[in-house]
Length: 264
Image 1: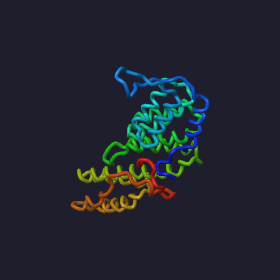
Image 2 (image 1 turned 90 degrees about the horizontal axis):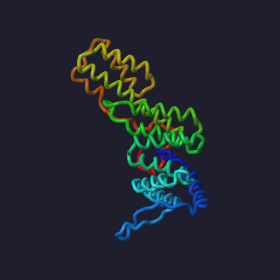
Image 3 (image 1 turned 90 degrees about the vertical axis):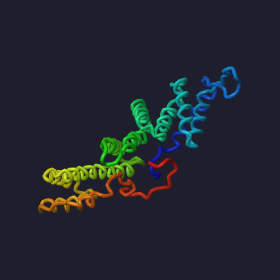
Image 4 (image 1 turned 120 degrees about the horizontal axis):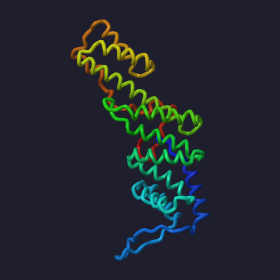
């Protein structure tokens, strides 16, 4: 499965094909012509906007694709092509890195089409909007917390979806990020000579995340502190290499496939 677990294109092809067959002569939207000097306009039907949007999307021109999908929704909000425009419009914003707007559009799609077969994919993307905003461990951890919540929601609702393995792996990676954040707080306490607070934090980490990768190291550090040892110049060696979100592939049961889209 591709690393970003994209929703099956068969659904999109079926939807678009049906729209083309049913509404090949639907009403037209207007665009300024690329030719002429007097504001000449070209009439574009909904199916043409959908095709142009998908053509741009397929070559990674998400900015132009989003324009076509937005125009389609503005002029034909009740057309068969509208659902395609809603979903792919959200995808465009996601791949442009506009995660806040993408999140709003994905949530709107889920609310308006709760029984649509694309909902598992949409729920996955909702979680990814938060996951993509996870920063270094010394920053806000809201992205990790929200993504864990939303990935868990997806797994509970659709345990057999094609996104389950990747969702579980990303949950583990996000959890490791949160553990490392807790561990970094211990470093702060030690550097400010708050040894009691450091030990309390280590005990919390060990109890809350017993299976985390950093837990054995946390146990060793706690043992040293409880023995009365001061860390001194050796402090940095206990906290190196923990600044980034771990690679989710490390926690996946599937081999990573070649990526066909921007890396996630």
